[in-house]
Image 1: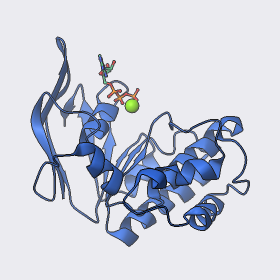
Image 2 (image 1 turned 180 degrees about the vertical axis):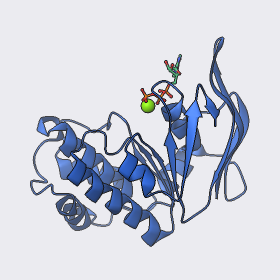
Image 3 (image 1 turned 30 degrees about the horizontal axis):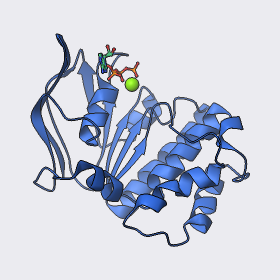
Amino acid sequence: MLAIDDVTMRVGALTILDSVTLAIAAGTCVGIAGPSGSGKTTLLHVAGMLMRPTRGSVTWRGSAPRDPVGWRRNNAGFVFQDFCLVPELSALANVVLPRRFSAFGTGDAAPRGVRLLAQMGITHPHRRAGVLSRGEQQRVAIARAVLDSPAVILADEPTASLDTATGRQITHLLIDAARRSGAALMVVSHDADLLAAMDAVHTLRAGRLA
Ligand SMILES: Nc1ncnc2c1ncn2[C@@H]1O[C@H](COP(=O)(O)OP(=O)(O)OP(=O)(O)O)[C@@H](O)[C@H]1O
Ligand SMILES: [Mg+2]
């Protein structure tokens, strides 16, 4: 269970998140909707322990990890809203890059990476990420996030750059990946099809959960 308990995030006088409480059990898929600027990305980053909240706590299996960097490396897969790929590296190299820093070891992840990319319709894994279309980059970012079947998958508008058909396919792939490994999946989205496939959907408005 990933538990966000009474989290408030302030930057100066601005309150970005206001007393947000939300729990995501292992094996469940939770959607976060809400207008632009309502705090969705901030909530996802707090949930993934990329940011410490001003107040409140984020716990995984009942406790707050003492080493958030290590926790992320070994438990979390992120799909960033702006992908955060390394443009000079190939699609495949991006997908397997986290392995270099991970407790899963440096075992050969390439075949699985190639397979995952192919499932997503990326059949040219050696092309540089920097020259891929946005929709292709988005799929590379998703493949990177699910490569090691992390216990927590956090995805920020993962279908925003995809056409409807590809978006549907990717949605199912994300959900399948989460279900197969019993992961807690948290997805920020405006995509009605994607949100309809979640077990629960919460809406953020001006930093508060409705
Ligand atoms: N470090 C920061 N300093 C100041 N303001 C910030 C900071 N981070 C986020 N904000 C503000 O907090 C609000 C929420 O930002 P956030 O990126 O979480 O929104 P969002 O719901 O993901 O929006 P979108 O749908 O456009 O991606 C915005 O008004 C943003 O300008
Ligand atoms: Mg956002």
